[in-house]
Image (cartoon, rainbow, N blue to C red; front, side, top):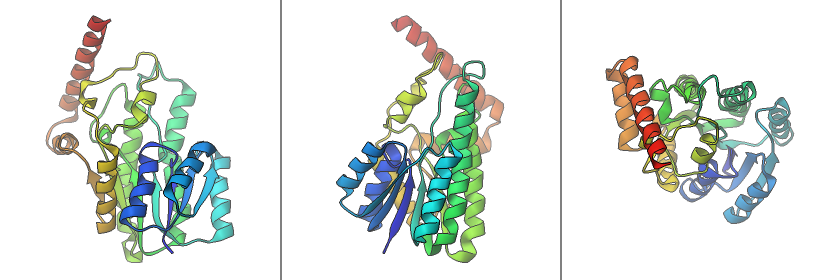
Length: 264
């Protein structure tokens, strides 16, 4: 039996991974983890395969412990682990609250590591892990600093983990998409002083990018970068000094802010 564990499974990229793993990897059972029970139940009904629903807030230790307890009780064999839970908020250090900053780090970094750490012992040869990185991890991004920095951690963590797991036949893939057409972007911009960079448009199709990542994971690739723009970011990160890339980003934000002001 092929079982996949997906965090952030109630919507967006996490939800899409469930359908793509069912169709492409022939996963026959899912553990779906998120806070919203009603949305998880809807995903379960649409999938049409056995699903265990775990309602948990992974920014809290109680949420992490709920998953740990379920693993210890059922001792399942995990074929795929997808850590898609995460969030980001635009805004500078003097705009974001301490709670917002802490929650971003706890979910994007701490929960990702802990869920992975406790899941690996239940994986065997051929197991696959997908960690949600971001195209934003390739460049320092003022006003999106905490989120993009957390994804730098995820990228390095996943690449290193991929090497550590090779002797066990388990591979880890860091998924680095550009701006995807999900509810993530509207939520991340829902903050005072938030900007809407022009480079976010057009948004990528969630179905296509997730399908690409699933296929890359099956092949055992350590990283999957989506569209040409994000691949260009990755290339420039290797060739161009950070200070230049950051100035380009800030210039883009400024132009977009001026344009938004004119439209008002």
